[in-house]
Length: 558
Image (cartoon, rainbow, N blue to C red; front, side):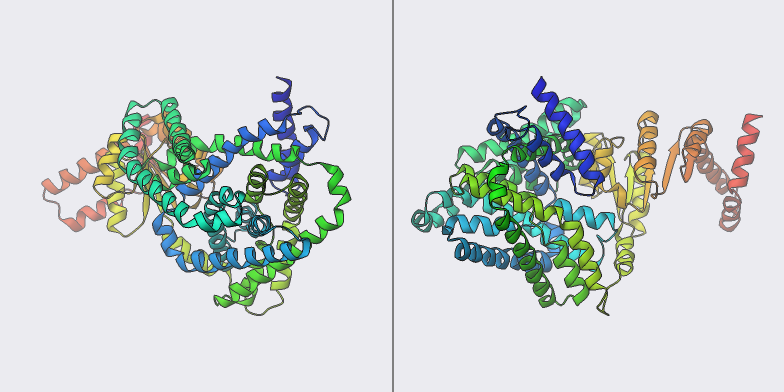
């Protein structure tokens, strides 16, 4: 109990301080682990077992990456993802590996792990900084995100290759082809089995309506795929990644993502804390010159390579500079690769400590590097303003429909007819399946949960339409949206005027009571049957303004 309380308390305090300082949660976890670990105050002495538990956080993280890998998304960004991103990883990894091998006389296998591990930038740092500065849709924001996307993909083959590197160069050379063919065959079998088995299984669980059972099924799915891959000699992380890819087009992906997110965050934090516990200050002090020199050299090389590659892909100089400085740091996957490589015997303990220090120091310097990159970019005349891309993004931002019953489907049909993109969520598995068979963009999920709203992209919705039948869920969703995304307009279907008044007090932009909806439809039918011409009917309906609705409400109350 003391160890558990120490872990939780240290994590909360350290992450709070680190986040307030703008350094990110990863550095907070590392600092917390260093303080309570065996080289700190010694509350926890067995960091190795803790690291094995924390590795499940890496498994869930790769699952989350896989579930974002939609084929359409990759295809739209294919030139920058596979071109710019692929060249950045290969060239940066090769340059850093060569430099490490020549400068420090490191073995080839270790140099490859170090070079390509440091070539990967921090997705968490990069995306967070872009989001805070509202630059995700800018030119350099899209360039940076494309590179980060490919780097996330590159983690999977790098992790798969670690066991092969551990057996020696000759064995790798002779067995690489066979291993790749075997892995491809196994992956093909898993993909085919998963494609035909996952959907029916998830549908059967979703129909039960028990959220706890659905969470258990999601965990079983991720860990089950990871275990199967591990049993055939591949990594746990690869299995989880494949599970995510198979669910990328599933109607259950947003609910699963919301259910997995807390486990991923907690276990990944535990992994970072275990890495922090392995920091031995003695060798770090004795190798301070190497740590600082290696960090500076890495920042300079990565920045220069990324700038040159961005220019080769016809990006303006200012955009190339911002992209290079943003991606200059080493990333959280460096911790994963280096720790796994140490476990395979590729990296010695002393080298692992130095590499972790380099990664941490580069992360600490990231905000300063981004600021410096912005100042340097301002000196160039050609700057691509983010407003242009914001306008393009506005045209493709969807309307989010919560609830896909009679009203929700009608709204979706009207939006589709007008060419307006939409995304809908509903907690009825049968309803979701029927709607998707008719071509609707509907996903299974609980609309009242903040995690589901984040996963489905509520932050970037141009409008949220709430048509949920359950008034408690609808009210909870409206309160959540108003708290998290106050900039997004909300339109709500209410049961009656009293409920509509409640929504109005909550700041909803437009409320339509069902009584008014029914009366308008009935009135339209009555006018048509009475022989009133279409133009006169249109005038009457236009006359039902907000003032007239207020009169109707006053008459009802009197």
